[in-house]
Length: 317
Image (cartoon, rainbow, N blue to C red; front, side, top):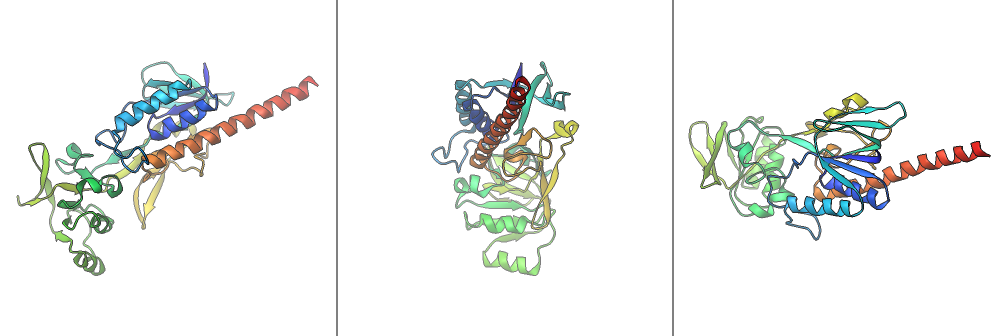
């Protein structure tokens, strides 16, 4: 069977795109690895009327809605995609048969490349955080440490100061702040600690502090990091679609797949939505991007079908 659209990735973006397409009476298959980026987090925030929902619950309800309109969902890892002679796409799964699609919607998200500090990966999504709008409220008024690993760390510390008066910037491997930055930190009463961080201290399965190289422990209940965001898009290479570096204030923060406002990429027939196309997109934004891509995909398919129908009518006449 050839599907109108195969959606690779079953997060908020992928399921929203699939729902839009299924409601447009398109045949849709969602292929999901079952490893959502926000799995370590207990709750998702900023999604109007769904604030605080557990990520697993949001996805389970989304899958049920897609299936309710006839969309199909399977668990699997896509390892390759290739263009066939007739213009369709062949999508190859790691375990399982290949499937064919007229169009592709890629919503595979990104990988958070975390600082190599003991304890960071283990506490990621719990007390090790990066987005204040996602998690700031939950750690408000608590001692917050910012693990500096790049030139944007001062900016991070100043941002998180909005949620707590007790913010400490651990310089770790970041460049030394300039005079103006030190003045800003002092004005906002943000403590600055020199030296490298050796690890995180955890007591009774709860983050309690940051341990410095010399053994000193600074009390903290949350640690802010700045991951490098890398789009999950390796399987698109065979289609001639690569990634582009994204910068903020002149510094690279990761890589993404470039697309227009609807999610259309430089490769005809391939759309992207969510974090694979926008590294800083939150759940509600990813869902909106999925809807826009679904609408654009349906319009593109409709235009193709109309073109073929006109050609067939002319031949018959």
